[in-house]
Length: 633
Image 1 (cartoon, rainbow, N blue to C red):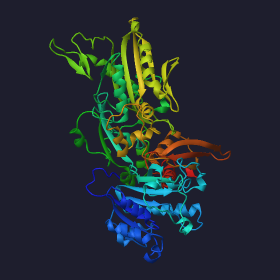
Image 2 (image 1 turned 90 degrees about the vertical axis):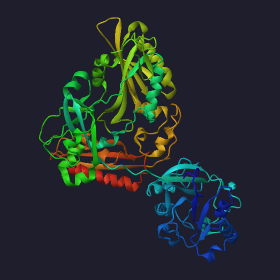
Image 3 (image 1 turned 180 degrees about the horizontal axis):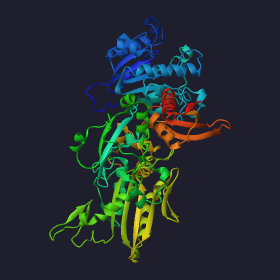
Image 4 (image 1 turned 90 degrees about the horizontal axis):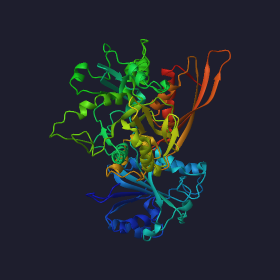
C-alpha cells in the first residue's frame, strides 16, 4: 500500500482486537487514517477488557468504527464490511486460544489470509505480528524447525500473498498499547523480538500461450509454432533503445566501457529467430545437437486456430511476426495430437525431418552482419558524417581516431537444457566480433578491461585451450572470448560472447534468473531510475517456500528426457527449479522401464503454495500420460 499521493486517508481494518488499545494508538498517530476496529467477542464481553471502553471512545471520536462479533476467518461474510476494501488489514498476535498447537494456529493463519483478501484493496497490505519464532522464517532468531513453526509464508501463499517485508514489531511507538489475549487470558504475549510481517498480493501465473511466428528464413517465408515452454519469453522487447530492463542496463554498461578501447557498431535491425539446418551446421559445426530446439514449419494448407490468416499476415511489417492465443482453449479442441504439436514442435506427425532450429547462438547471424558492413558504413559524402551508438564515424573511416572496429548484436538465443537452477532455456546473448591488429594485443586489452569491470561481481577470467572463459559461482560459465588467425598475419579475428542474463543476475544481486522474466511491476519499477550495476535488487517476495514432489512412471518406448523437461516447464508454469533422476529400473521380463524423478518447486516471482504446487504436479502427470504415453505409478 502506497500512502504517498493518496487523495484520501488510508483505510485500515484491524481484526482480533482485545482491549482495542492498538486501534486507539493508531488513531492518535499524526498521520490521518480511517480505522475500522473489530473483535470476535460480543460487545458485553469486549467491554470487560481493561481500558476497552476508553479505547473504543477514542476510535469513535477520531471518526473510526468499532465492530463486534467479526470472525477474522469469515470477513467476506460480515455484513458490516460488505462493499468495503481496505488499504491495510492488521492482525496482531493471532492465536486460537488456550493451549492450541502449531497446526491449529497454522490453520487460523491460512483461513485468515483466505478471508482477508476478499476485503483487501488491489495494492493493499496485510500486516501480521507474531512472537519471535512463530513465523518460521530466517528473520526469526533463533529459528524454529519448520514443523514446529506456524509457516506463515506458506499459509499466506494459499491466498496468493507474498511476504514483502519483515521488521521488528515496535510496540513502543504505539502510545498506551497493551497486548492481551495470551492463552485467552488478560495477559500479554512476549513482545521481545516480535516481528511484523507485511504481505502483498502476488501477480497471477501466466496462462500457456499458442505462439506462432512468421518470418523470412533464407529467402523463404515460413510459419512455425514456438514450443509451449518458451512462449512466455517471446516478444518481451528487453533490448529496445528505451528499455530499462536489467539486461539492457548491463549491455549499456559494457558498451560504455568497451567504447573507451574500441569503436563498437551495434546493429539494431530485426534478425530471424529461426535458422536453417545447413546454415547452422556451416557456421556452428561444433554445436551440441542435444541443445537444439528443432522446429517444423506449419503446413500452410492446414488451418490453425491459433494463427491469423495469410492475408492478415501480409499486411504486417517485415521481419518476425508473432500471433499468440491462450493454449488452453486451443488444446481443448485439438486433443492429444494438438497437445503434442504445441509442446513438441520438432515432432512432425507426417514423419518429415526437421530442417529448422531456433537459434542457439547469434554467431550465424553475425556472419551476415559483417558481410553487410559496407552497406552500413559506406556511402558517405565529403560533407556527411554518421553517428552510431554515440560513436562518430569520420570520413576517413576512423572512429574517434581509433582504427579498431567491433561489430555487435544482441538478442535471444535458445538452448534445450535440463531443468536445474542455472540452466537457462532462453537468454540474451551479447556478441561482438572484429578483425583487429595483433600488435595492439586486443585479447590482452579485452581481458584487462573485462576483468576490471567484472571482478567486483565475482566473475573470473579463465584461460582454456579453446580461448578465454568467463566463470562465476554458482552458475559457472557466463561467456567466452575466441580468436582465429586469418590470411593477413598481422591481423586476428576476435569474437566475444556474453550471457547478459547471468551478468544481470550477478550485477544486481538477483536470487534467481527467472526474476528477469517477471511481469510483476514491483520488479520493473526498481530499474526505472536506471540504477548502476552493483545496486542490489530488493526482493518483493521474501523467503519463498520450496516443495518437493516425486513422480514415477513406466514407459515402453525409447525415453526422450528433453520432452519430459518440456512438459515439466509447461505444467509447472516455470516454477520447477530442479529436476533430478533418483531411480531407474528396467523390468527383466517386460519391455518396460521405470523412471522416478524428484522435482523441486520454488518461485521468487509468485506466491507458490503447497496446494498450487500439487495442482501443477497433477497437471504434469496428466500431460505425461497424454503426450508421452507413460503409465503413472
